[in-house]
Amino acid sequence: MVCALCGRAAKGFGYTHQLRWGEFPSHRFCSMPCCEAGGALAQRSAGMIDKTPMEAQAIKDARRPLAEVLVELGLMAPFHDRSAAEIDRVIEACVDGFQASMRRQAAARDPFDDPIPF
Image (tube, rainbow, N blue to C red):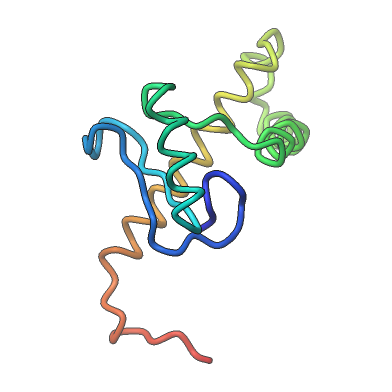
């Protein structure tokens, strides 16, 4: 996991708006300074922290591969007149769903069942 503020490795610091897990996203941070700054930002923004420039660029860069797959599968017509913001919502939903599944799987995994080789 990476710090929601600076992108470094998250190290156990976190913030969930009003401690309402499931209603608001949980943010992880690398340090107390990032946690305090990120928590303050999330408090002012109803629990949300804006995408980093890198995340925004990655979503933009994913538009073309998404369009290529839609064309390949014959699904482009419904997306043809959609705005970039609407396409970005589709991409973000896919990424969020993927990450949520990975977190659930990791949380449910018994670390002694399948140890990670070093």
